Image (cartoon, rainbow, N blue to C red):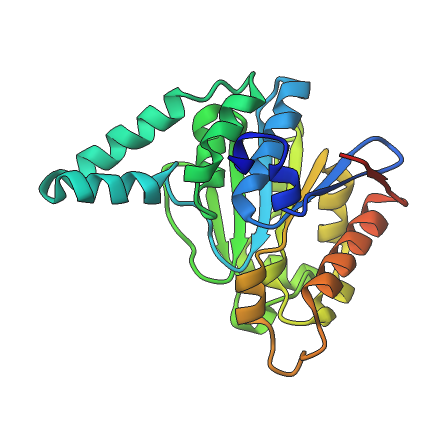
Length: 254
C-alpha cells in the first residue's frame, strides 16, 4: 500500500526545503500528513512542540475519529460513542513516536482534521493555537481563535488582534511549529498583508508545514480569483515563509 512505504511522498506530491539556518519547510497535499513533519521535529528535539496553525477549518477532531466512528456504527449503533473511543485508543496504542514507520502505517485511517489532537495524544505536541475562520471552540486543551470574516485570508497584525491571538501567550521554552493550510487564502492578496506578528512567528518557528488541501482550496477560492491556481498559492506561501524566516531555501531531494 502506497501510504505504508516511502511512496506516500509521491502520492502527496511531498516537497521539503531547508532554510540556510537548517530549519525545514514541508508541503503536503492532505493536512493530516503534516503530522509526519511534526513527529520528525519531536524525534530531533525530544521536546513536545507548540503548534500555531492558520487554517480555514479548525482541524481539531479527536484522533482517528472518523474511521473509528464509522467502524463503531457498523458494529453497534447503540454503543457507538464508547466503541469509537475504544477503536481510537487502539489505533493510538499501535503508534510509537520513536518509530516514524508505526505512525505512517496508521495514516490511511487518519482524516484531514484529526492530526492536531493525534499529535497531542502522542506527546508530539504540548499545546496548539488554532487560528481559523469557522469556530472558537472551548476544549480542555488547546486554544481556538476565530477570524472575523472581514479578515479572511489576511495575515496582518489586525487579523491576529481581531481573532484574539496574543504572541506573548506562546512559551519560550518549547519548539514552535508554524502550520498553514492554503485553503485559508481565497486569493493572492493575503500574502502581502503579513506583518510583524506573522514575521515573529516565522522567525521563532523551528519547523514549517503547509497543506495544499486542493479540494477545499478550489471550493473556497474567490470567484474573482479565476487565475489564482493551487500552484500559485503554494509558490506564494513558500516565498512568504522564505522571506519572513530570513532567506532562500534549498529543496531537499527525497
